[in-house]
Length: 247
Ligand code: GLP
View 1 (cartoon, protein in one colour):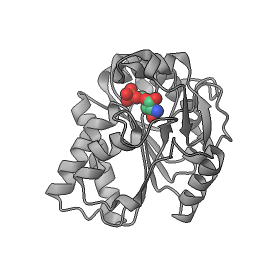
View 2 (view 1 turned 60 degrees about the vertical axis):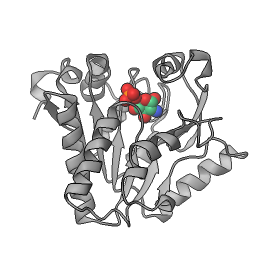
View 3 (view 1 turned 180 degrees about the vertical axis):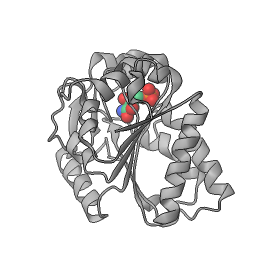
């Protein structure tokens, strides 16, 4: 995998946004895999700016989000559908029907997961996937223990993830205990993967991702096997990498 390091989170976000804009320009009906969390916010802000400045046509872009909490309605301000509308979809010219986020309120979650995988396949598969990284090495909501062959499914969140994500809720008890997430296998099928990370609290997970053993104990480490994957890192997040891995 390739690794690029930036002095600030803003530079990291801008680099990711420029890469996405470039790919959209060369394939206007591109299928994007999108992520939530605090890290992508800067990237989405930059993408909104770049799209306006460059008059990028987003009308044929199709998107699939990685994950969603179970039990939060789309209009709950901590649902990932709400996050995506607020930070990206409502600010760019993408038709809402082109945007997909797993439905965490589905009455038959298993059927919804299968339909989500089918919809990705029908769209032609994901061309470009954006990822963040959890402090415990999770990607999307693939917590430690997630297998290389895992696909879109219901998962239990670890206490570490619940604690990490409680900063977005009034109280830790409000954080959903379960989520729907695309699996490791679903993510690895993307043609190209861009992972972004910032902050010293991500340095350990980033080092394990890039230089550690490939193991389901650190799900992000599976990315080492992807043929076209780049990590865009802010300096602090890259601080535990050996100098040799930097481009
Ligand atoms: C959540 C999301 C992940 C994200 C992670 C890190 O658990 N499901 O997709 O990568 O948080 O988020 P942050 O960028 O806020 O650190």
